[in-house]
Image (cartoon, rainbow, N blue to C red; front, side, top):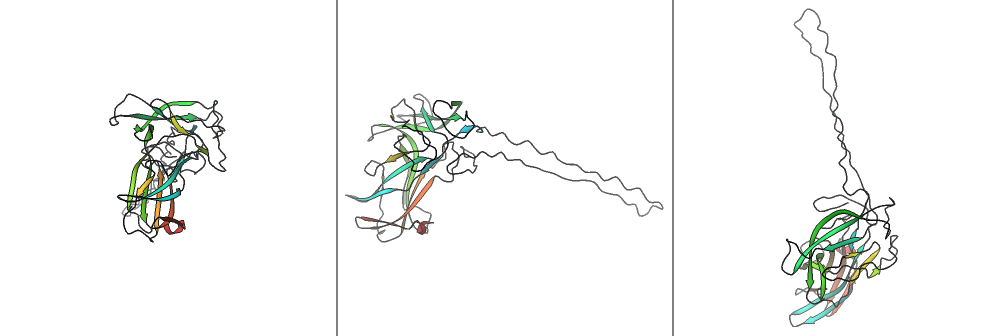
Length: 288
């Protein structure tokens, strides 16, 4: 389970809670032999000491239903020609594969965010049935609130987004340094469609509107989809990349500000080659 400032591993589609125990032990003691003495000195009785094992550190999120956010592979790739060159356009999707919902609440008044922005808090649910499965109406919101970032009004989408929800980048295969990147992609977080084959699905859409005061989120087993024609769903292509093996990386929660079950599975990568106005999908093995 990962949370801001902490790193813990977990399964991709299920909540795994691990309490670690550390055992430290030691032995002391020995004998003393005085060879100059005419009579043998009785050996000291061996002694041993054992340091007691410390108690496991309590897990503050035990019994909670946390989300697990993941970027899915980019799709609907297109080339748009502009007066300043070419744009690579693509659709992106954020999936919640965890047992709990991603729930963000705006606080209209607060510090720490920029002009025309306000703070956002994450709320998590208690697992009332102790079955690691979210049930709307039965599981209740836990008392704690986790400040995770800012809400910002998107000027072209005409509603409020959670800032820095995703990161997009394009790089050459075999390298780690991006050729071009969008490090802060904001999303209006809501349920658009179900994750195919997901075992954890809330039956109906639960999150929808993204106004200044409404909560945002993605239910377990649901996906928030952003189509290729929307503002922000593009990367400007550098020159001289035609015919070269490229890797398009999408990452959810790039700043690791959300509390979720696993922060190691947030990214998705596809291989592509570009020739003029055409985009060809290639084997993802070239980008490993």
